[in-house]
Structure formats: structure tokens, C-alpha cells
Length: 170
Image (cartoon, rainbow, N blue to C red; front, side, top):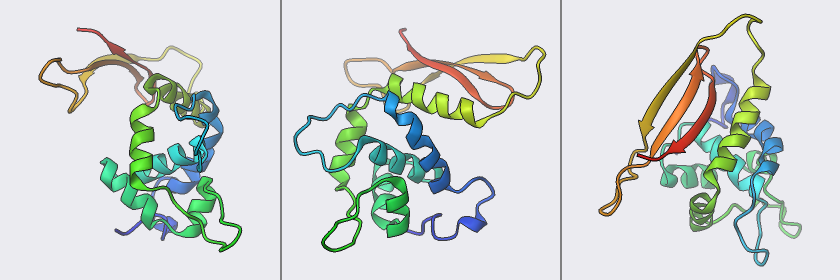
């Protein structure tokens, strides 16, 4: 699988690794759902790697884990993965480790952290009034045999920035 990290000059937007590394400073807002024993990777490194893979075009959990597995060693170091002191290599997490973590994460805390990152990244365009659009969306794949779909309500300004997003009941 080709990675966008191999040729960052071709990207028209900021490089995925660069944006993801900047995001890591905001991930302290997210509580770590894992137990204390057996933690090999820091939570920000795992979430930042998943974010970098999505910025590079990954659209599924399988694609995210493949992107992280295929990422060059320098990118893994930049994303926060530790270097093995004996071999000098940068081991990446097993795909199941990342899947379990992403399922357990507090979605609201992740949303607040990413929102804070995006707010810090943008500059205000004008001091006047701004237009805000509000829309609801059904989360794809959230419907089960016993429950209806999960619905979100999002507020967005006309520059494309999401101001807030919350899960709502029926």
C-alpha cells in the first residue's frame, strides 16, 4: 500500500505526519481506557498514528492498520512510537491492539481534543457576525437488530470548521 509519507511534497495540504504530530499535544484530554499492565505504546502515539492514516486516505480499520504497518521507521518515530534500544527498530502495534483501543476510546473526549486542535490551527477571519449551519447525521453502520441508528447533531461555520458535534437521542 503506497503511503503519503513517502512523498510529502506531492500533498497539496499539510503532510499527514506533520498534522498528526501537532495533534498529539491535544490528546492529553483523552482518558486512556486501557489497564495499566501491559501498555507498550503511549495513547497519543496510537491515536496520532490512526489520525495520520486517515489524513493519508485510510477509510477503514483495516486500511488504518495497514497504513501504520507500512509507514517508514522515521514516520513511526515522529508519530511517537518508541525505538527498540537493542535493535534500533521501531516496532508498531499489532492491528488488534489498535482496533481494541479505537473501540474503547471515549468518542466525546476525542471529539473535544480534535476540536481544540482544529480551533488552534485556524485563525479568525473577521470580527463580524458569522453564519452557522446545524445539521443532523445518522452514523453509518450503527444500526443493529435491536437498536436504531446513532444520530449526531453538528454545528459548522461556512469556512468548513465544525464548531461542535454531539450524539443526540431519537
